[in-house]
Image (tube, rainbow, N blue to C red; front, side):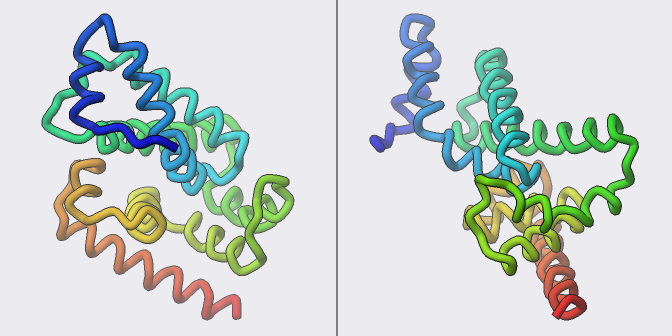
Length: 183
């Protein structure tokens, strides 16, 4: 897949004549990484697809609010994280199931998902991650899977790098403890 220069896309997004084509470039360039970021938060393929559509819709409708002080990817990640967490809150409220009861089925839900291509250990890891508080889960996913730097995560989540490092290390400790308990 062809990669586009962010500065070039930013210039094209600012011009109403080229905005639509530039946004199509954005969608092509960032769809896959956004999908996986969302999927690691909401777990299922269908939910990730729904959230991703909302992310791009929100990005398109709020294109005027994009400031050049951050990268397009950072802006999209912020929208994706907020939409994903909002989706989880709505789902928990709508189903009236406690977070603990809902999270206990993550491994089984993943293994039954026809789009899941991991093994039982990977499903267990996802279950352990799902038990983390929302912020720790997001920080862990962005650092572990996406290999983002703390400075980048800081911009996405609008929090200090020190707090993110602490969240990540606490998340790793909790995941390790989960595996020890289920070994």
